[in-house]
Image (cartoon, rainbow, N blue to C red):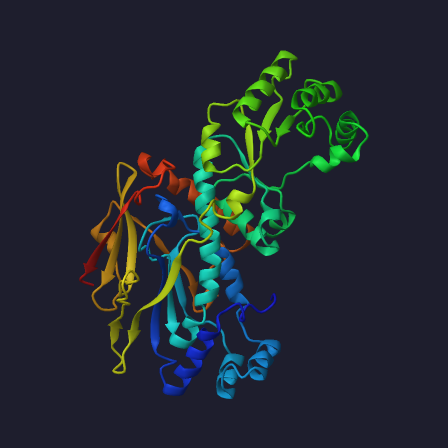
Length: 442
């Protein structure tokens, strides 16, 4: 057990529980749904990320004495509600899209079923994790597509808060990055780590040559030398003189990257360092990476842009009640009708329609009542998108920890192959797949 995550929530979640306990609705069975009304930033698809983190945090969503004392001392809820929360454990069911899956407007990414009291207070935790991680993963996937077969390293820890940095590294890895500079991400989630030296290393020494010789002595000739602290051409000459033509790589962190990369490649080839790789960094995003496609670049390092969602720092998902038991015990579909914020009521099942292996639509079946939905039988060529993540309050271990991250990464790379070619473009546009709703006569 880790630290309690129960207060990583908004006050109104608990005041609703307080009121529901008073009026007798706290135990009503409910279905909540987490989804995005639209894809922000004109993105053509979204990537689900954060699910494994949410399931991990859910295990620690409990009110220990420190949390209960805070609620009592600040009169946030009634004494009766404090007593209720003392024994709180989520005992319901959560189903949803697998981590790494693609999503589109209206996709029922998570479906949370339980009593009103136990399900409503998960809203803030679920949204804070999935909104952040999915935004990072979506940006990372676009960068991965732009990079093609060239590896990407995430190195944005210094541009995010300390815990967000770890989460961002995890999300980027799921969506196609191959390594991170963040050691905690490596320890917690099994992500390969990388890193050699910064400009401070060169500036520390009396000369660039001294710095390079020391780095080679410590790390061997397979290391990557940062060659742009002073003059790039001179830096490359010094790197090869020190390390020889078997030098693993050079890194460029400034300048007009297409021009500089071409010049450095020519310089390396002329002295016989044909296998020395070129890594570029310096404020890259998916557009800069795409612009380097024809350049002699071997790898990319991305910082600020990936950890901030490349201009779209949140996925804009919401968590809404879509069905509940009525006072007579029967099930009622409910939906918000607010202008521009309407939701679609009812329990749902989602699947992806495909033709010759290429995705053509996101189809969402809505139950006419509350019976089990079986859209796959009506659409045998479609791929069901939902799986049970938590049952009886217990998370499926397959989605947790290092193994869960590896599975999410592999799943993402598989399903990305289904995207139509138009979805791979970086320009702003409508979603690549249309979302179709159908009412199931369940």
